[in-house]
Image (tube, rainbow, N blue to C red):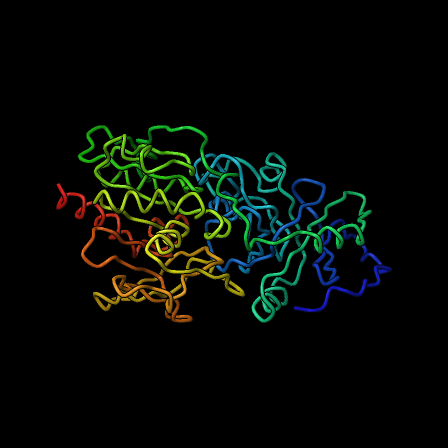
Length: 393
């Protein structure tokens, strides 16, 4: 990354009509038109390549601490609604798009994206060359930045740069506690269908305890649809807390931040659950922390994987899945102990996308089999978890 020591010159003329800017920690300024909320917000600037599901992406708790650049140009064209959300309040700190938002053209739309962003105090920036920004992130890594929106265009570039430069970044940061539930609750909502909307699980066969590190609602729906009574517990739950519910299986959710930081309290719990013999399934951050509990290490990626078009090979079946992904940290394959096997691998960069513990009912994947948004190639993993639970009983 560029040297941040020298102070950049901020006597940059504001382009006509510009009401917002993205200011990076190296002093780069990208002007555009603001929408959504006014104000300023700091975070790690990343990009997402998905062509659908912007509302699910913006409400994915795994994006806590991040400003999302959408590479697809038609963001906002289907509006927003109260159903396509992964949590009640968006975790993302801002959104950057290429084109101005058009009026919604979808029968399910209930609110314009601009109005929806305003209602959630989410700052948006349009008119940015998102291809150039994406290439910059790809080549130099995800920078810290600040999005600033002022209706009169009066943006304090120097103050924004100082904020971006001072922000510590995601490495070493535990964000799971910011997005986790604070007390246990039951979940019985099942997956959405065109005919009926969301359903309800009334006759569960098994009981799964899900640890919420920033769980997406559609993961919980997939568990319920697979025949589970789901009890959701806060991130800081102990093994004793989990096992007191006498679950048939335990699930470790997705979430934001550095797995090593969250693992300070999560790893002892995970080790306790593994020792109990209960079937265990982890996704995304849950996968990373399970790897830590099994003796591996994680590290921060330069760019990360974010989108709904990532090819992953299942090494056990030989099949290739197109997957939905959102992660900036990854498991260090060289650190995996001999009793842990790699089960899935990215065909983009060969990184670890899935593991299992040999001789134990314990496995995890780095990507998102629940999709939302994205393809449904990997839904079989929920069935694999249920089969594992059935066999253990």
